[in-house]
Amino acid sequence: MDVVVFGASGRIGKAIVQEALKRKHEVTAAVRNPESIELQHERLQIVSANILDPASVAAAVSGHGEIISAFGPGSGQENDLLRAAESLLEGMQQAGVARLIIVGGAGSLKTESGEWLMDTPGFPEDFRPLAAAHAHAYEIYRGSELDYTYISPPAAIISGRRTGMFRIGLDRLITDEDGKSSISVEDFAVAVVDELEEGNFSRERFTVAY
Image 1 (cartoon, rainbow, N blue to C red):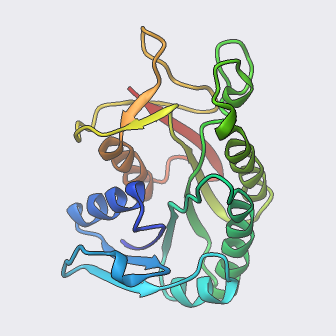
Image 2 (cartoon, rainbow, N blue to C red; image 1 turned 90 degrees about the vertical axis):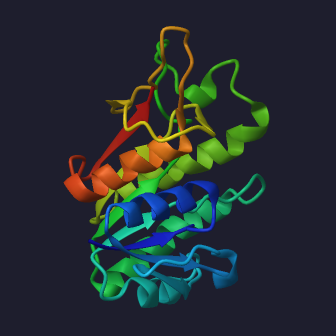
């Protein structure tokens, strides 16, 4: 497949690019600063793009079939998530590209109590605005006409290794027998590229964890 990855210079984006290349896909890393990508590969192209600018998005995705957004702004830049969602929708529409996979947030996953994760007592207060922005962005994608898939991570994405073994759920936070919710960044990338190849969750959200 021929896939464009926004946010390819981030921790999760890099892992997705590496996983896609490992599986013989043609990858275009769309980043604001191309010098931030040190990886070199015969099937990797690096282009300059601003995910917050619809015209830039359209130029980056034109002629490609599949788009992955691993864009993840930091604390204090929550509004950029919403701007990026709107920009992706407009730019992809301009370019005539419909398939989008989004790396989203975990805050709006339901817990055993029925509450959203970000509304539970132990959720870090500092992360709540970003979690709320992810939830709002999800609604933007849901209201679009794109063939989107929204992938919510578990509560923690940790450094680890690629096992290819994890559980899959929909709108409910996945926890282990100790109540922990986590996955390695390498296995999260496996889940993203699995969806790229298989397309099991068209216009749906899903989540993964050990």
